[in-house]
Image (tube, rainbow, N blue to C red):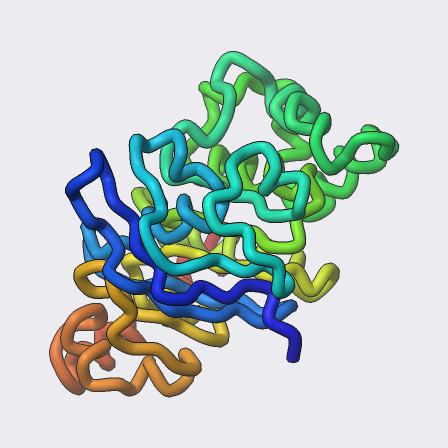
Length: 266
């Protein structure tokens, strides 16, 4: 399988002296959904921002290592060039234009990879992916719920026709039933398009529900990686992200059942 993304020995330094990444190594195959797990401050968001070209907006720079996209070295490539190449980030904050409607948010980002395309067709496609947004197309984004804003942010990214979608903190601050809906929508998008996705998650349960492969970051370095079906039974993962031992696994399964019940009652 072809690698769409390869990150090798990546180091990032903030304000010339604060090193946030200490040699990150990861690979994402074309058509794969992968997840970056880790606690706050582990370097997950910095990794995504370095890949996507956002790093230049953060008073930070890549000081070692490289990022390859379809084999091409794009280390240090800045916005909007990364978007034109097909790498699009859904950031943790400032996801949408709150003073614009849902439809206007989608339209305002249509000047990148979507140039020359039929705008109405693109809009209809996004609303097929996110039926909830279709009902809210004239509503200002500032009046949307957190989950609806996340759907709109992902929809806006998809307008750019990415090959590689990066999502920072997919489930942060969202109700479990909404998270499940977003997961289902992303599964549908992936099935239709074989889009490659790399997402940042603090919740192992969410990561395991969506991704087929995972990387665990600690102190700016990948300390553990593997297929999510293997990671979900890893003792370290159970203790750090799902509770402790067999009790943690039981809690994970109970929470999964609860989310299914909540979804059935909506």
